[in-house]
Length: 84
Length: 434
Image (cartoon, rainbow over all chains, first blue to last red; front, side, top):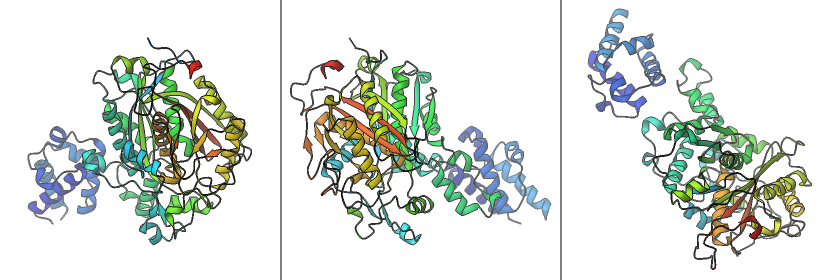
């Protein structure tokens, strides 16, 4: 099970790759909707990549429910913990 | 006062040109290259590695993509769309389009021969065995109308956005149809052009299977030789070109620099063979005549012809016969810039329209690259060896595509009083005077 730090790096790296930015630019308090105007396809791509990396089923609703990147990481951590 | 087009509709001005082509990434560079008459074909190592029978192509010189596209945009689109967006950005900048345009009155009209096939090829090779892992953007990246609609999105132009697929004539069809929409009052302005990037394993392999392409692997620079006795097929290229077209009176009113006019357009179909042109050139010749009639011009008004001239025996021979028919044996000087640029498929028609208009304006017809002797020399007046100086006059630009698709444009340079236009009239002349 990845640590929260590892999970954070993975999530921020995936997001930055999809949005064409750097992982350092994506912070815990970043809102993908407000700060980047992320569209549904981009969000689905983020979800698909995280699914592959974490071998975890992720619904788009899981990601849209989170207001910030930090909340999404928390949610994913709970899900990965719940699985083990 | 602005006179009307002979059809009674609006005249159509070319006010901006942008291109990303093997001959150069701006109009002046490409103009210089085609006048020099040296081929841009070169060996492409990845084609050899892929074990293709053709080892070379004409590629767009590297340029700074980041100056045009954000990484976020760039990763959602393929090379075909990237090249188009970059060419269009240059064209819009060149036209100095005003901010106050009504978005509903501006259209995007783009031709592409194979559209998203190269990116579909890529995703097929990478993901066919694991379809569940395909990128989410696969459909928007590969759909045929992706280049045109991405361009409309970029500028928020909400007029008609159409993608034309008439194979190698697509770029010409797009420019002609865009001009018609302006002429008949549907649009005030349009971004019109073409794009393709077909230098891929499957596409090149497929064309090579028909023996349509030159296999002069030992000497790529001598491979594209339109109308030459020793030609052995066309040379694949990539690239995009975009013209900004505007209603003439509106362009004048805003003080736009005008390159010239899209004065005539016609298209038709051989309806005969799926790839080979009709040998007698009758239908293609009729297409040229119709384009001239559409412009209200006669054959004597045409200063030179930009031939489709692919460097395949079948095209060049049929095209020479078609020109001979249309011009009753009185051929004006004929050039074929694919000797320099290679064949950009959907990009060629728009690139060549831009170059033909500039050549017509400057009174200089480029020599056909690698042309030494031609079996068609008795039919048409081919420009050999060095540029031919001509009086500033209208130009006929031909494109013929697989499927028997014929499309012809007539472009008339603006009498702007350039250095090579002594005595140029201050205002455009009427068709009868041309």
